[in-house]
Figure (cartoon, rainbow, N blue to C red):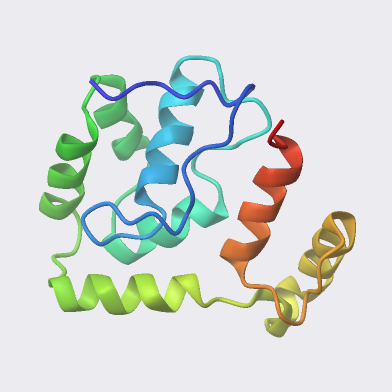
Amino acid sequence: MSPIADLTRQAPRSPRLRLGGYAILARTADKGRATLAGKSGEYHFDCPVDNILFGFKGVKGDEFKKVLAAGTPDAGVLAWINAHGTAKTPEEIKAWSDQVEALRPYGNPPQKEWFGGECARLKIDPTSTTLFDYLEEDDRQTFPRK
């Protein structure tokens, strides 16, 4: 069984950390496990970021959550995501992960105002900040290193 992160005390894994080539997957698993354990803090499972992954694979958050609830370790989570939803080649997974890692919400009109406000709160430049940069900076500011 993979350890359950207490997200009231530490951030989930980086969205950049690729599990089986998938960006976001390790972070999503951390948030789901913490939610099931009642230790999610300010983090939300099945959020828009998680749904970038779920949409790519054609699975639902509640299906994924059942896998986590069974105590499935990371290797089993990866096996499940590969076996369910839309089949993807390693090349498709890499291309998708690279694309997601480069997302710049400030350039997307429906997200511009929200993202600009979030970047202002964190004191970072929204015009040069990717979604993953934002998530990691928010994690750093939420749980500063001592």
